[in-house]
Image 1 (spheres, one colour):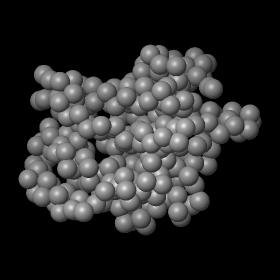
Image 2: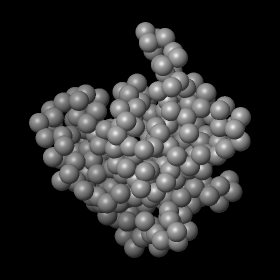
Image 3: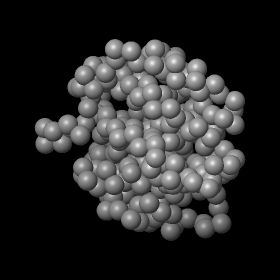
Image 4: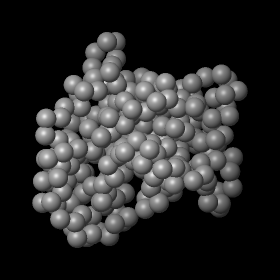
Length: 255
């Protein structure tokens, strides 16, 4: 597998890194070697999964990893998880791919402990960096446990997220695990625009805030209304039953 640090070592240390081009270099090497690596891709919602899958499934075997205990309230986490499962199922049916889905247990208290003292940080500040690290670390650990070649995150598709920060964190997390980080800047090449188009094509719910209670409060989001809408949406729904065919399996066992 390709170590991103080997590529970065050959670049001018003073230039801003175009992580999309770095990933394209890796893709060329995969194609030259005639390999399709296994990638565990963290996503925060269905909209960020859209173009991510359309792009990556050309070159990789992808499993989606929904690990976002920063999302508040819990029922909103469950709604976004369900919508992501449905999108994966619909995407496979439409394209003939076989993308799988894996989800982390919801653990809001773990997240709140990590960001304690950073509650008043502005959006995009240190609290967000801690949150990126938290989710990428979980993704890398799962990638090792289940034998994936690479781990990455679709967070870079958002124009509101700093891809330089996310990729720098991913590279640091890589140093702790026996797996490789897949760099990206998925908003490039009209990626974000395509994600909006695909959200319309697949009729995907697009949330009005990133996820955490702090960002929601800063934006003046009515979280009680969000909770009520999510509860109504999730009534009589169970993604693990409806979309069992996309749930990631290892040696025949569901995760």
